[in-house]
Length: 291
Image 1: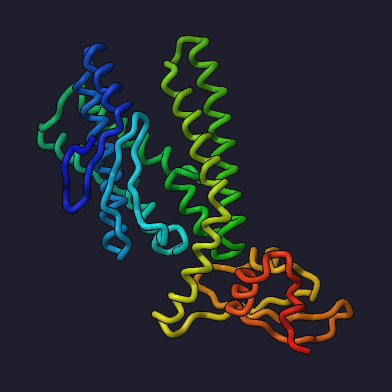
Image 2 (image 1 turned 90 degrees about the horizontal axis):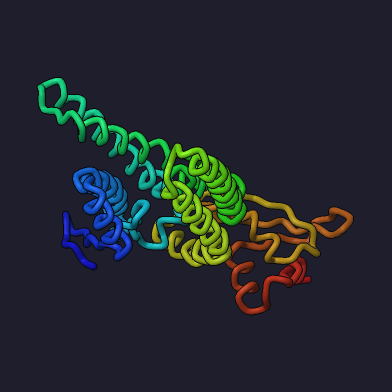
């Protein structure tokens, strides 16, 4: 359901989010539900506005029962620098709201019940989202950090696996909390959603890598110059395995050696990608050398 548009960003409410607000109303805590709604909305809007500021279209935010999602162009995920800034924008907005609320309290503008709840919501949103696990903001920052060192695919696998691990830990503690009466099932549902989302991120890693490769040529044409990354590979290494070492914002030159470590030649990233597309990922890199 489309709620409206704010600063060029369309706001959508997931049907389950509306059901959650209805439950808040029945429970007599609709005011708290609306506060949580506002906190999530500002958090996701911060992501969208930052992405737009960095030149990546992000014109839609959907609010879900246990958070929200700002939908940006796929190029964001293969640009470590812009993804880091965009991911940081959400938690920073929560910290800014905390500072603003404290300033209002100092001027006597404070609600005895909703004020502390507003602070709690922002603290939870900021610090939970900074966990280094996909699909959380901290996971995107961690993935961006790793991608510049080990490549986008293994970086995504690591960050998504952490997301699954955190989800299991949260689920275990939530079950114990429900058993002891210390919390409700909402935390367990959040853990299940986190595990599901982390699994989806992990499954999408190969497609993300292909997007990175397709974007690299356009990036080189646009900027004219890219830093070079030199790799060395034995002639029987398959192209698919070799390309897992490719990094974002680097153009790769691969020195190919035979099994006696004798020089055979050098191939470019462009020729590797072209061979991958036309001949498959199992072709040995040595076959690209003209002899």
